[in-house]
Length: 220
Image 1 (tube, rainbow, N blue to C red):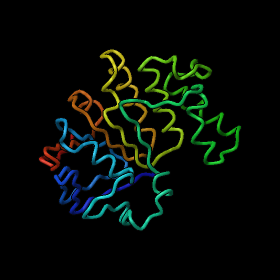
Image 2: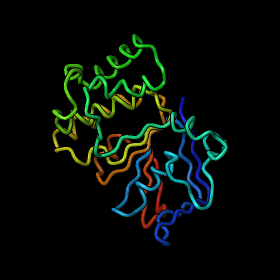
Image 3: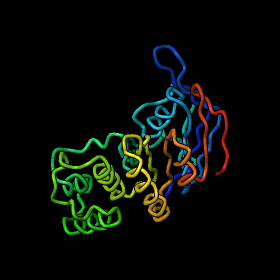
């Protein structure tokens, strides 16, 4: 499954100043949408809004035509996956980091093992399963963070500058892997970036933000 998202007359303020003002934005289901703009443009605020972790002061967000405010918070958040620039892994093994969300959902142990193995194989980190997260390189840690989200099969995948802390070679390798992996999921994907190469490789749709407002949108 995937989500069709519509934002209507959204206003978010911080310290009395507007940080996000969106009159109307439609994010079509199953597509990869790039949020592009300078620091302070509102990219991360928009992503946090879509996680349900913050709420707009005005306006509404509709998911497949239904207002988010009418959905149960926990049920909605379980449909959303978030990967940030810093992987924020727990102090445990790679396997345990990836499996933890499935444990919380009471998935049977054998099925957890199968699903974890599937995603670590796709992301090329099968050999890391027993390693402690603290011993991983930046690229390895980001692959673990992606596997931890993908294994939960989110309908909405949010990526907040996921390649920003990686060196060029690692970034290009992971970017090319995601180009292959994302179409195998049914998730609607939204990622923020400063890098035009990432837009060219991954995005179906480009959304430019400036001073909290949408300055342009177009298919890539």
